[in-house]
Length: 138
Image 1: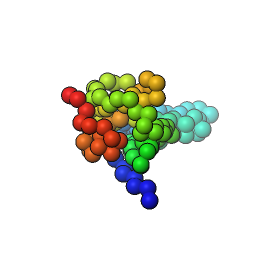
Image 2 (image 1 turned 90 degrees about the vertical axis):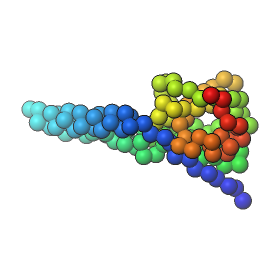
Image 3 (image 1 turned 60 degrees about the vertical axis):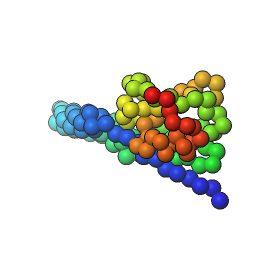
Image 4 (image 1 turned 180 degrees about the horizontal axis):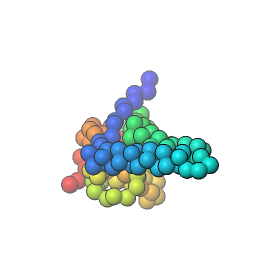
């Protein structure tokens, strides 16, 4: 029987405020596209999907699932599958680089020949234990 453990992401308030602002701006832009002469219904739909739909999807779906030998990372349309045995190191970072982490309180996971992915699990210690790592150094 495979045991899986799912970890939600930590979410910074500034990010939520930024996503709300982006959504409002998208709706305003979509409205402007709709009232343009000739109507821009398709353009308005693209604006709504890209400016509001994608950020909402990422916000609602970002999570990390650890099974016996696999770390499965999901964030909107993006996903990573990392074998636990391929993890070379884990260290804390506040890097603003792009990644499936919705907080700047992050862990940088180095795996398979120097590849990196940034994560921000809400339960950092539980996550580290689940992937077989000791506490990350400060």
